[in-house]
Structure formats: structure tokens, C-alpha cells
Image (cartoon, rainbow, N blue to C red; front, side):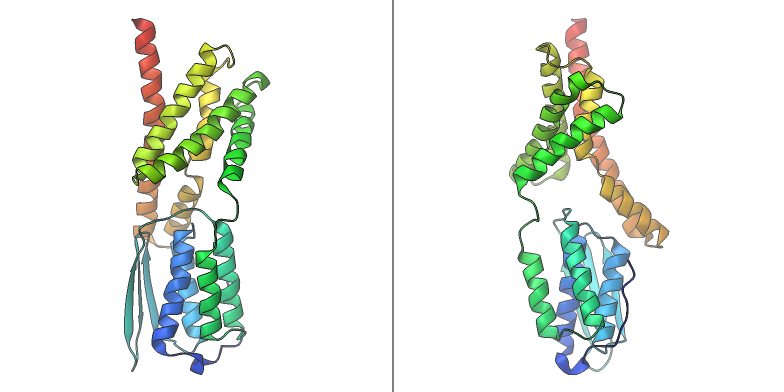
Length: 266
């Protein structure tokens, strides 16, 4: 994870403003695609140091980046982060560019062009492939949680449909909590439908396996890593976001179960 310093790049390759723009772009790509806060700060300061700017300071939160460079050409930049997703391939590519900068292989212009290409690149996998992967993972999670093979196909169908619903709802309603609640609600309804049709047999394990692709595992991991690295604000905010996601998933499933129990009682 630590990046080698290597020999510094040519500090005359760009102005202070261009270097600051490069650093902020690198940090924004990492933060928007699932990187930890301390990784963002470390990458930005290493890139600035590689170009001869030793008085660079960064402060990163999940919703924004503050970056300043002291000295004669003092400059401060603020970038608002409004959308975050998970694409660790882009994080890896930015880390590779950062290492090449530290080893003196890229000028500011060359590095900026590479980072712009990374930022504008499409996700590494098409949406249909991620839905298929979620479906297979849901069936495997069902088996892991002591489910039976006769529920494997219903869990696959519900899990794949759940991620497809989540992607659709997130485009229609740009509120993450609402999209996750509706996706888990529909997963619960599908699992109940499979049970009513005689396709599924154990409602609990089908639902548990199907909602696992929605669980914020990376978010929880990053929250713990940020807390351990001393970034308390970022760690607590990411932990709160993970809690809201878990609450949305649990609320959607609980709503379905409560409705079924109420209907059965009636």
C-alpha cells in the first residue's frame, strides 16, 4: 500500500497551479471510487513532493478535499465530492501513476492526461456482468449460511434482481437510502413470491443470501482503516453511512416480513 518515493520528478515540469490541479484530480479519483481517506492524503502529498513542493497540505473528508501549497505561489483548492462508488481498478491505476511520478517518469502534463483518461474511463465491468456476479454470489452466500441447494436458484434470482433494482432506483431517485430500501423491499417480495409458488423453501436463508451483495462491506472496512489511521472524522462518517445502509436493507426486509405476518394473522 505504501508508495516508494524514488527519485523526484522534474520540479520545473509545471507551475504550482498545475501541480495542485494534478494532486486534487488524483485524490478525487481515489475518493470517488472507494479508496480510504488516508490513501487520498498520502497520494496527494507524495505527488506534490515528487515535483518539488514540500509544503503541501491536504485534509480529506468523504464529502470534500482541501488541498493547499505554501510558499511564494501559495494556492488552495477545494473540491466537493457528491458521488461515490466502488471501482478499485481506478484506485489501482491512480496508485500506479503516483509511483511513476515518484520515480520521475512523468511530467505534470503527462500525468494529468493519464489521470483524466482514468477518470473518464467506463467501469471495468458492464452492468449485466455485475448483476450476474451478484446473482452467483447470492447463491453462494445462501450455501455458506447453511442453506440448501434447492434454494440456490431462488437466491440467485432474487440477488441478481436486487442489484438490478438498486441500480435502477439509484438512477431514478438519487437518494442512496431510498434506493437501498426499495431494493431490499423487492428482494423480500421476490423471496416471498418464490416461497408461495413452491420454488423456494426457506425464506430466511433466501433473503439473507440475496441481500448480501447490497451489504456495505468495503465501506465498513474503510471506516475501520481510517479510524485506525487516526482519521476520526472520516472513519465516523463512513461508519454512519454504513449503518444507514444496513438500516435501509434491514427496514426493507422487515417491512415485507411484518406485512406477511400481519396477513397471516389476519
